[in-house]
Image (cartoon, rainbow, N blue to C red):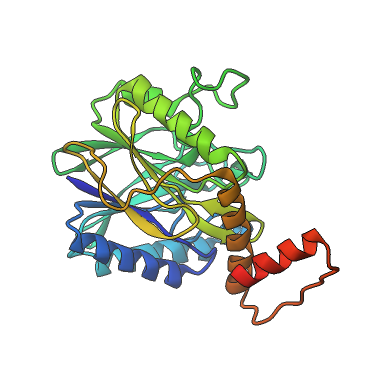
Length: 314
């Protein structure tokens, strides 16, 4: 089975545009023989949607968009894509942070995020309820555990300090009969984080003897930059494939042997990552806000030279 990880640059609130990006990528993946496409966390609406989630009409529009996308892709491989889902709980937050399985023109089911971060730049408990259970997607003969971003960030053996949660979804999945774990993510960039994240995922895969396929959002939304760098790791924790950072792309994984496939990128250096993050942040801020011009204040110092260089590259 061939899985395509869709590393795309989504714009918060641009539902039709995000759906078009997903549709185009899925059609490309179908031409490459993909049996399943995996998008990123809240891909339909873009991450982070913040207080747009407080509007029921916005959430409904996300579902309407997802349904239309399912219909347009009914001849292609199934797609896992993130979106907000109305909670069925009588109390608490009214939404789940979910992944929908689009298959043969329909939404065949949803998988819900369990660990909701409220530290650093995250405030997910403001909007979402815990999923409560973990799901498994059957694709062909393979059983895939479906996790969303933070669900893989609570391994007690990797993180030696205080943990934020009293559960580890990966431990739960490891006790089931899943063949691999897929993770739909929107993990923001900061210096050094890609190395830590890759080390963590490698440790998880080796610990549970379970391949991990990690699809991460790319692009910038306001003050957050997402680096992409999607990954495929085998059951020994070895990186079989890595998507290029700070650019859109599709990363493929053949589940039969998980050997590196064309398109795998080298491990980038930190200085290069800092440059790419700054350029992408400026470019997407201007583009997604619809600006047509900008003013540069240059005093002649090194900081001005760097600012000018970033602006030109962007």
